[in-house]
Length: 291
Ligand SMILES: O=C(CO)[C@H](O)[C@H](O)COP(=O)(O)O
Image (tube, rainbow, N blue to C red):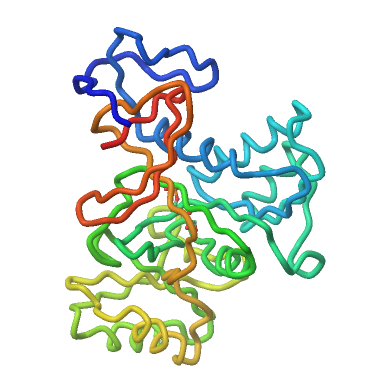
């Protein structure tokens, strides 16, 4: 049940670690985008249980979740966790934090994966891979029983491709040929296909799997996502694309605007937001605001 409260504006920063901001605190708050990401990540980690095989996501939001899992392991609150990293970057982070790791060969069934996303549409379809790790993410997240997506509200879109690139991983061999075919495929949506580069355009971006990424930019909605997915995957030279369709089981959205929900306990809410049906988990210890 929501407690009416005035909108929060001001400059005081959230302290998630200490839980210092009590619900009754008179101090106004401002949440940075990174704080929102951290809130979503910490909330997702509450679903982790000892003994689980965990898919460890990639990106600035997922990084918070990996940090949190390591904290709980070191505090003895989680035991016997096995992590399966979705990128070499996350692998390095997990190793540095002492999280025991494995892979899909040894653990083909993953209990829970927690990862960020670049876009979430109203059917909880995702765009992922702007960080470059879409192939391993898709392999691991396809193998999990539960896939929790953690985002701040900026990731909610009206349709896939609305906020930027939809990445496609391609083999380096004749990448230009594949890029042209991808662009032609979505001619009807005003598609522009661009090879991803690094270092201000100096170097071609190479994925963890030794492949390239072609980013597709659409001027219009591409329509039926399943049809689009099948068409992309039929092109020889394509390895995988960044549309994650019907994969997310939960999306946790950390938001700035809205009313303060009742405090001291956890709330599970299903609601509509800009046409989205979203499941939020709200815990006032973390000062998470929701509409
Ligand atoms: O798909 C990804 C990496 O390939 C990331 O999950 C996605 O790019 C979101 O990143 P961030 O949490 O930094 O916004």
